[in-house]
Length: 290
Image (tube, rainbow, N blue to C red; front, top):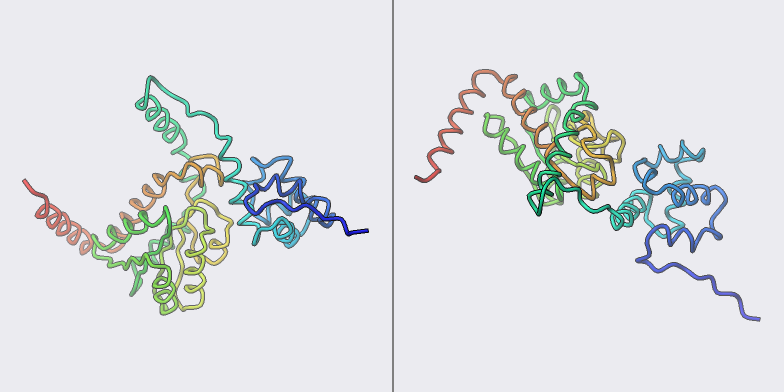
């Protein structure tokens, strides 16, 4: 008699399909993880591996092994795949009035209603420490990948505009090469909404190998990059959480924090920063045509 063939979910199958396909072959502890995710995907996608482990009473390594049993490299990849699956069921956009302008007004109102939460996860000590590090650093690097890249570039330009020269590097390999060369007192400013982007994580690890400090601007206090940061500036949940961070992907709150941070660094630098800011405005004016 031939051995029975166990059906395996296709590689492009969403997480809930993979769970149904592989549940019977998983270890009991791993099965608890899979069952919890299948029962409450929209809720549990917001949790880190450690938070999920604590909720269902297993070890963090069990969460990672369960993810790998389902065909993912780890929990972060499973979480991203689950977000993609949930995105397919996003409800129709709310409108305020007719047509596209109605949808735009609805989006603006939704964002505005949550902006008061922007500072809810920031703390005075971290803000003060970030300002002190950036103001005093002999060298400042600024990193950001994906949707955070434009925020990082803006941060670099704004700091340079007040006389606090900041190097912006977009290429992931260049980021790592520059980061590992940081010396005592140097600072790397890393913008990463999710705190889990692989290229940004590689840059963060390079900073950790150097003598420099890492200041992270992010949306989540607990993430692979956050664990490496010397200072974490966590933007409050203006939207709902990890799922919205990837699906809606607004960077308005991060832009607000960047502007505030640069202003505070300018204050710390004193009159020279104010004078340089005026000179920068003059240069901008000279480059605007009639």
